[in-house]
Amino acid sequence: MSVRKKLRLLFEEPQEGGTITVERAGPRTPPGCQAPQSATKQESHGERVPGARGLRLEDCVVYQCRRCRVVLGDSLHLCAQEEKLRLFVCFKVTKYVVVEDNLMVCVEGDLIGCTYNTLRCQSCELDIGIILYSSKSLAYLRGLFCLFQNNITCYLLQTTTTVEASNVNCPVVSLKEHVEKLKDNLVQVHVRMELLIKKLEEYSQRITSGDL
Image (tube, rainbow, N blue to C red; front, side, top):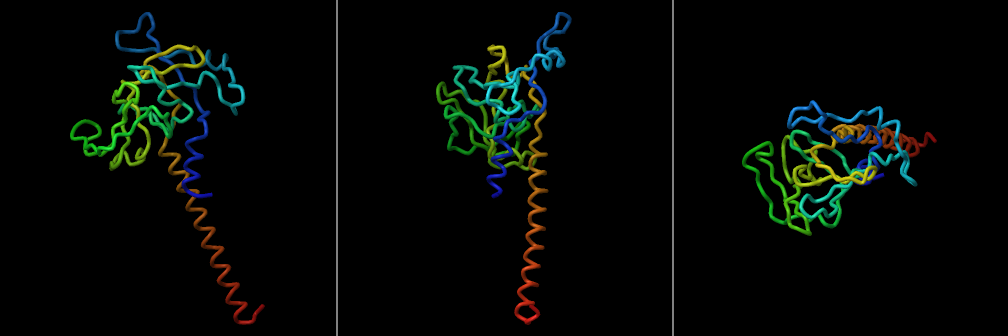
């Protein structure tokens, strides 16, 4: 199996671990703070999605443009959540996400020194994210669709409600762990191939020398 195909399988398969929760302000919560719902209650009312392997309806979220509500992507293709940068990182998005041709350079903030292409909503032309072209500290996000949480909303399929993306806590997804696992698998395959090549060379030498 090729490296490209392995990467595609890693990120296209639904992430079944964890639970997506929506933070709501409690009666005694100070302004600006949010209190998460009970995870126990969510687990007890988990409903399976018909035709999906182990996928729960409560884990299904659709990402929409904040301005025009057009669908940009969904949680099945979520491969990372960068809380510090307030990004939802997706392996795949819809046709309504347009990648601008101009290459931009960030000169301030958390992305300083990074080069990227801007993502825009095809419907209303709102800036909804970026695709990193080069970055030293965030190299593992290169080529992926990074959606700004401030510019999108989340439609929850279980409750059929729309909430702020900043109030949605997705299951912990570590893109770095996926990449490290893939690297380990590739190293193992490489070692096995070298052993097979060595055995074939020894076998060929024995045939040439007449030992067989």
